[in-house]
Image: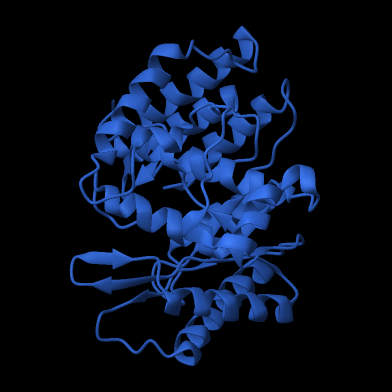
Length: 329
């Protein structure tokens, strides 16, 4: 899965390489990419070398996850070895998929997570990995065709997993995502709540901006961007002084109660995107509002400039062509 590439744009086995070329050209922040094969991994490592010749150097974290608990297939091991040889960072992930009838006992699930982590770390040690790995958790519950990423039980388990990671001496991240159901706004909310809860609890979060299930969604990207702005604002904190608090309103509340206080002001503040979604009620067509916001963004945005020169861009495109030729395209 790759943010920025909608389904059927390119052959699926080439998505990782195509997306990496875009990231190397335009990304200014650290990024992560799922890799499907050793052939792709080899080309992606070459792309990172090209990127670092011109723009600020970046290291890409490889998500080393078992396909099912304790099971690592040959391509995953080969890619991990290539990453170790290139001295790139690795994230050891656990992805327990809890069936509907499986017990939600925290001790049972945390035991699975710990065993998964230890298996991944053992493989890395056998491959002579000499950098500190990062432990990651992606937890979900299967309820029929629906997949739940956000619930009080899952939040409790993520806190327990963080304590285990701290005990083992590793950094810890929670991978938040959404239900695998394309173009369903409810899945977007599920993703946002999962990220928000984990962030509030102090967990470092990873995820795919703009992803709903296996698809790229500009609407989801707008919601993710809004959430990131909320996190940024919360992380700045508030100076507890009269100038930054609604001091007059607080005094009125103390005297007359909540219902009698008006919070209206003479100054009209600029309307934020979130306010454009309209009042919070079941009849609000939020998806239509987000569609409208996406159209505004696409109209107002100019084509971004590559961080690399023309010569390096051509080298990246040559590697993309190589991958397509490998696939017979």
